[in-house]
Every structure is written in structure tokens, then in C-alpha cells.
Image 1 (cartoon, rainbow, N blue to C red):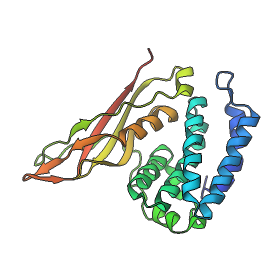
Image 2 (spheres, one colour):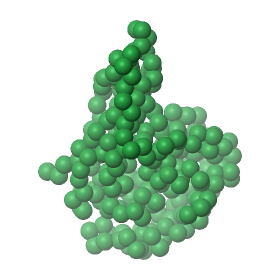
Image 3 (cartoon, rainbow, N blue to C red):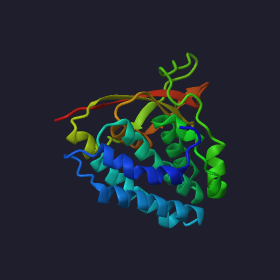
Image 4 (cartoon, helix red, strand yellow):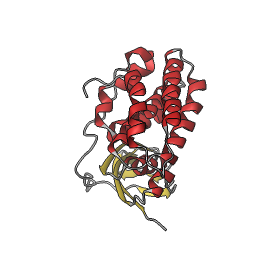
Length: 235
């Protein structure tokens, strides 16, 4: 795809939405047009540094998308556009940890997101571009170090089951590799075994809320790798 333009992709979404619409999803041209126009509007807001205004619009938009879109490659591209904009808004508001998580999410869902031209978004765009995720889709989780204790889960947040994925009876296992920081927070998410984008997206969003007892080396908390598996089952 080459260098990705958020504005160009936003307009291209109209054709994508029409091509991936299914009767169960109720995504018609009017909905597609509205989503695309919202992304153009929020892009303009981000350029104007109206981060506080743009962020809730983007969150509502992604929630609606997850409720309607089924599993497909096109859905991945569609979800990544507002995800990058969310990261820009969060960075603009000074929430660097959340911005990095969502920027890393965008890259592991769609590695070419790292090529996005974010120069029009000022400092937030520059900061994201300085943080390109190495190996966003690793073949396996790294083995823990022998001289460290393993991180343990203190707080578990179950992921949402997006309605669009449920309608298509999408299910299975997502495996992700996280960095557990010395303060017990998770960072730098990478997907080792993905599912269709809505499920992987929801799993990554939930993982951000998990809390851990960090690994220790010589009695001191240290950064460590952690492999997390989430199993989506249909009732």
C-alpha cells in the first residue's frame, strides 16, 4: 500500500464498507458515508489540537464499528484508521501510555500502519512515528528468563465479544505477547496468533486493563515478557 494517508483511507472506507456489507451487519451506504465523514471530521479536529472533542467521537465510532463489522481483511483496515486517531488524541492529551498501547495495537493488527504519514498532526504524530514496534507479528512468545520470577495476574478483565463477530460465529484463541513493566502494567502488545480483527481488537483492549505482579530479579521488580491467551467461545 506504500505510505498510508489517513485522509485517503478515510475516503476509501466508503467503497470498503459497501463491499464488505452483509445482511446480518446492516452496514449500508448511509452508515458507511457517516463513518467516513466522521473520520474526516475527527482528522480535522486532531490537526486543530481539539483532542478532548475528537476522542469521545472516535471511541463511540469504534464501538459502533465493532458492533456491526464481521471478520474480513477489510475490517482490519477499517478499524485501524480510528485506532490511530485515538492514539493521536491520547498523546495530545498527555496520556502517553494509552497512546502507545493503541499505536502498538494498530501496528500489530496491520503492520503497514507504521508507514502512516502523521506529519500533519504535529507533535503527537511525531511522537508516534518515533515509536515503531519491532516485530509486530512475532511467530511465538519469547521464553522467560531463568534468573527471573514470572509475572502473575492480579486483575483479570474479560474481553467484550463484538456483536459483529458473534453474528458471524467467529471464535477461537488469540495469543498475544505483552511486556509487563516493573509497575505491573502491560505494554507493547504484539499478536502471536490472531483471530479476525474485531476479536483481536477486543482482546487487546481488555489486556490493557489487566494488572500484574511484576517479575523480579534479585528481589527487585523488572520488565519481563508475558504470553497471554484469550479463548472466545460461542454459547
